[in-house]
Image 1 (cartoon, rainbow, N blue to C red):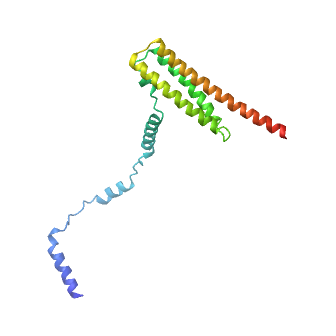
Image 2 (image 1 turned 135 degrees about the vertical axis):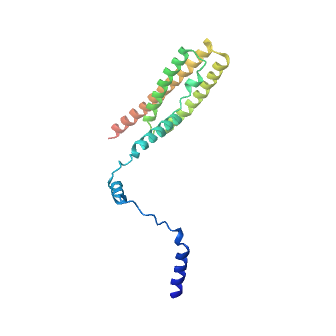
Length: 177
């Protein structure tokens, strides 16, 4: 035990000149207490978090609902752009109605309708490519409007068929009771 104490004494004697032995000023305790008692307002990270969440939400919406129509029609006239946007709004409304009618009984009809809509979309893309390549002329504009009208009438026909099936089902159920 004595050897350990001697070795510690030697260690401390070697480090004796290296110790920080500066005296604290007399107001040190007062300064310390003031800093301790001083209440700094808590940083409100919720504000920054809300801003960051808003930015992420906006980016997410812009990525998932990217509207490519204005880019496709940079070269088209205002009337063509307006016609396209009006028809596409109508088509989107009909698609929403179609998806609202989704049920196990209507699943096959809706899936077939969506496949047919993809075909119409592919045809429409060909028309747009032709419009880009050759510019606007009556035949291309007529083909574009015809495609858009066909899509709307097709969706309306599908919706009518679904409603007829629902009426038939309800009527047959009433007769069996």
